[in-house]
Length: 345
Image 1 (cartoon, rainbow, N blue to C red):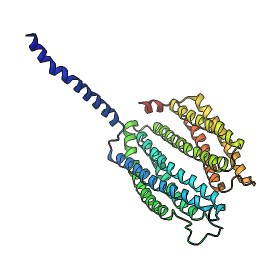
Image 2 (tube, one colour; image 1 turned 135 degrees about the horizontal axis):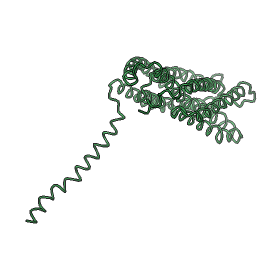
Image 3 (tube, rainbow, N blue to C red; image 1 turned 120 degrees about the vertical axis):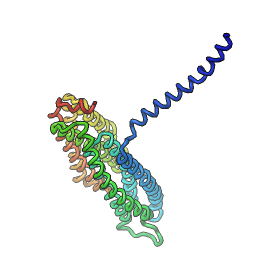
């Protein structure tokens, strides 16, 4: 009798770990599925953005490798004067790859937050990348300008790949314009269902999305400037200068602190953090203006071969920093009107 009972219980006991494992797998899959958008246009957009990063990233990586090999050949053939310009171009090419990753981040974040403003900004950002792909070709073709090149020496070995990148980016941005149009309609309808027709709430949400978009662009352009400033001016051009130590130990950590504070200030609707962020943006703007004046008035060759790009980055970062300051003030005036509760719901 006891033996029969034991035999009856063994199968049930043996199956239990299998069922528990299946439950664990289903639980994991259900949690992972929450991060996958169900709307097909959301899925199409993320796939398209990832495909752009993958394809352009590979091509641009090949361009960096070929161009780097090209730089090594300039000195032996008597084109050493062109080396600084050629080295500077490598930095811009790497920034272009990072920008491709950044557009994927903007895309995913725009979809998860249902931000009409940010998806439009993502499309505009990609148009800017298309413009840079053309500028990249022009810069690479002008590396040896003003010098006499030896016969049979290739002065633009990355030409074919850069043309391919330009053509592909023109296709990507055209599709991006259509995707932005489709998502604009989808986002508007979903936000109406979630928030209703409350005009005040929609205005608060719009200001919030503008601010978050500016904050993300601040991250890219602040650190884009930092990379250029350190690599082109300090490390590559002036090793040992005290400016490098100040920039690494003070400016970069301060930038991270200000952006982090600015993010949590609006997320928590905390006025103390908001005031600290405003002070940080104001101080950052003053520092950037000082850097811009220094670049424009410098005559000792410190910014040789990088003056135009750094001037562009600093000017754009100043504009973004100023706009972020203004939009943060506008957001802070709408604290306590229920937006935080809606976003955390």
